[in-house]
Length: 131
Image (cartoon, rainbow, N blue to C red; front, side):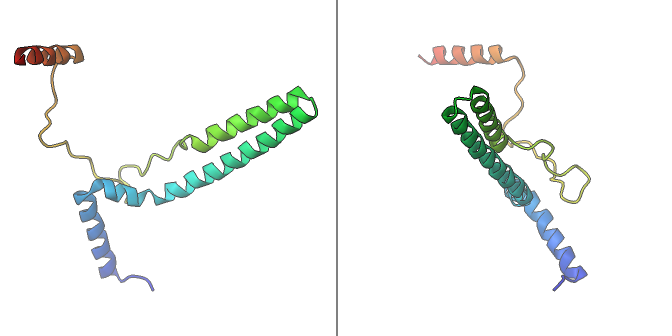
């Protein structure tokens, strides 16, 4: 049964409030379609690893080096495919309905000025002054 217009508006308001209150949780809930794509990549990668293993064993048993090497390459490609993130699935684009709100700065943590080495020297001086 479809939602009425009033119920849809209420649901959208609740989604916006959730995104404002807890953006990490909202992003995790939004990412469910990416989970299916990752699972599909994993299944394809595992199938390629198994096929490569079969080719590798067949190449070793028949003393055909090219077949074993090809099987190893297929196994390696399958493992890389399975565990690497898909390109172009970074999430919704700004301006679209599912776009995440801008992330607020952390309270209490101001941006420090100076280079990394200057900050390390200041920390070292403070430590030496405490002893």
